[in-house]
Length: 256
Figure 1 (cartoon, helix red, strand yellow):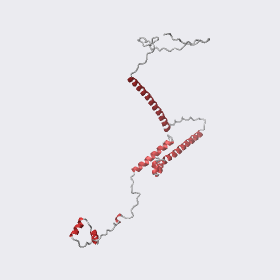
Figure 2: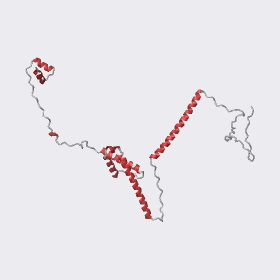
Figure 3: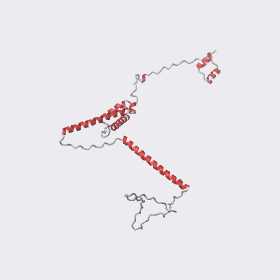
Figure 4: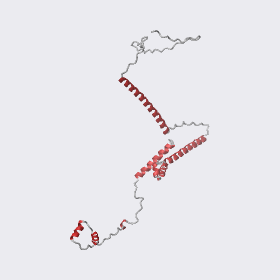
């Protein structure tokens, strides 16, 4: 077999000749006490060994393992994508914690009274915004409650329960979250009180105007006994046998 021609890059005048890059040889590390291992080399002119031919059973097993690997990789990618979407959704629902404000330093050259007035005004404005949001959200939650739609009197009871001071308003969270928690707590207190208080089921009924002892039953009208005409023993036996009353017997005997 003739040697294949090798292509040599042209040499340009004024430039250094280009040297074709060669693949780096990886030398295994030398362990103390062992002889160095020479990297395997193929004999010159000998083609690389072909991959082994698989039997149908081995090929089927190889295909199955490849399919399982691709399926697991696809499932893992879907799970990671769903987890990322879920975490993003949770971040939108749960209110983010507000970082504490850095402490302010007081400049001695600034008017202390004016600085205190500004601080108080800012605090009052912040409290006002919080209270307005709290009230508007609370009223909206109460109006949308299914129990309030069934029993409208429950709305005012919830408002009175919140204003009574028995429901603690958490002012360290978002006012909408605080309103939801306050309405839920007030409603629970009212329903618990209702269930623990005995009620008379007849309280709404109208009392009786006539004593029970004054009720007179209707008079029973007694009828006089029916006088039968003279009858033979045979007729009397027939009346007993056919269960004929005296009234019916009189009617039958009076017919022509």
